[in-house]
Each structure stands twice: as C-alpha cells, then as structure tokens.
Amino acid sequence: MNGSKMTSRTTTEMQIAREEGKSKTDWERIRQNSLKGIEPAYDEESPDATMALRSTIEKRRAGRPAGSGTKEQVAIRLDKEVLTAFRAEGPGWQTRVNAALREWLETHSRT
Image (cartoon, one colour):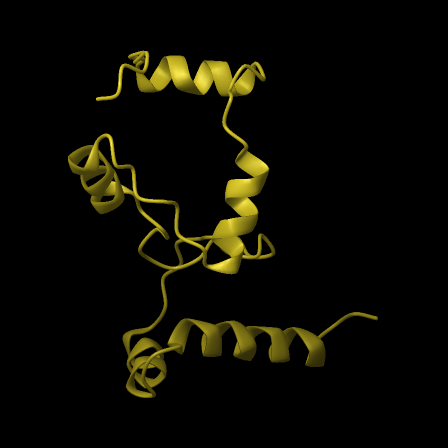
C-alpha cells in the first residue's frame, strides 16, 4: 500500500450511492471502453482482488436472450401424433407449430 485511504462498503451501500449519484466512478467511460473492448487497467495495489473480481463478473448471462414480448406462454394439450410429427423435424418445432397456427388463422379469418 502507498498510504492511500481505503474505504469499505457493502454491495448494497455501493448500489445506493450509485443510484443517488454519489458514486465517484465514471460509469459512462467504463461503458464506452467496454463497448470498444478495452479492459480496465490492472490494479497494482490489490492484484488478488482484481483477479478475483474479474473471475466472478459475468460479462454476459448464460441462456437464451429475453423474448420479444410479442408472444405469450401457454399450456396446451395436443394429440401425441401432432407433437411427434413436429418434434421429428428437429429443433424449432414450437416455432413451426406457431407458424402452422398462424397460417390456419389467415385462411380462416372472418374479415
């Protein structure tokens, strides 16, 4: 250490300070650097903490991206043969069921 003042805060305290605009971190610069692929500088005063933090930060959450919000999740009972036929075509069978229902709707519309 070089005699600098260290302050300890909980994650909650840091979040509150950020929400109240009391954070001294230039978040916009960090966002811009992140978008450009620029990694933060190595922290010489606490290299272990820097490495531990980098190993736990999630750059992107695992899993599928959030849906578009135009679809609604439902539970529906279908004949076994219908499901077997759609699933036999491989991944994306639910999308194909949706397309088949949409096609039926277009041919049977009341307008």
